[in-house]
Image (cartoon, rainbow, N blue to C red; front, side):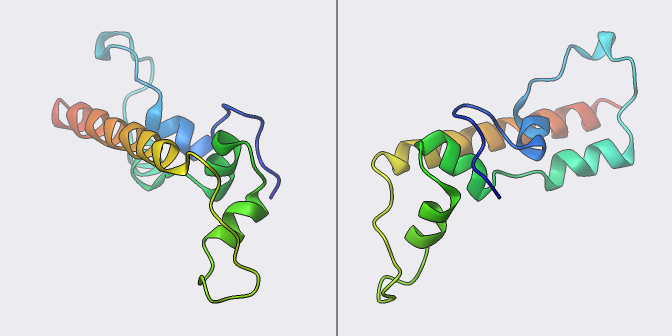
Length: 103
């Protein structure tokens, strides 16, 4: 997989982090497929790579066992990027729970 341009999210991430419009403006009701797409959507290595400005391969190698000869140092600033992706994911799940709770 190639890294996405900086700032772009994978389709599953976009589903989970974009705030839904107010319930009164929903054209389509929440259904099982949409709800589970939101639930199972998550950031990918491509999302992390794009946000860090590195390749997916760089992320994969940084995740390797540190004793592996192929291991590389994680990209600078990875902590804030991972924290931001986690916050976005949590917000998306909270929105999903709230919407399903109002049906």
